[in-house]
Image (cartoon, rainbow, N blue to C red; front, side, top):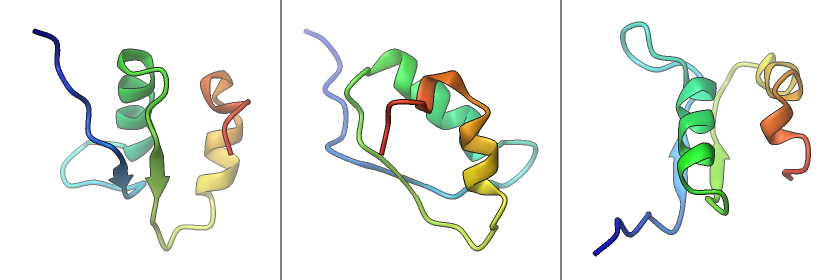
Length: 60
């Protein structure tokens, strides 16, 4: 029996410790190709950071 992914992931770009929300989103996207990921953050640089990652180039 496989892992059932959540219907949606809600992630902040900055997480506690040394964890980066973009890195977490990449890991999720690699494991679950059709994952729905929503970023909620107060940091304006997130869009620029996401645009640097090829894995997000065809995502809305």
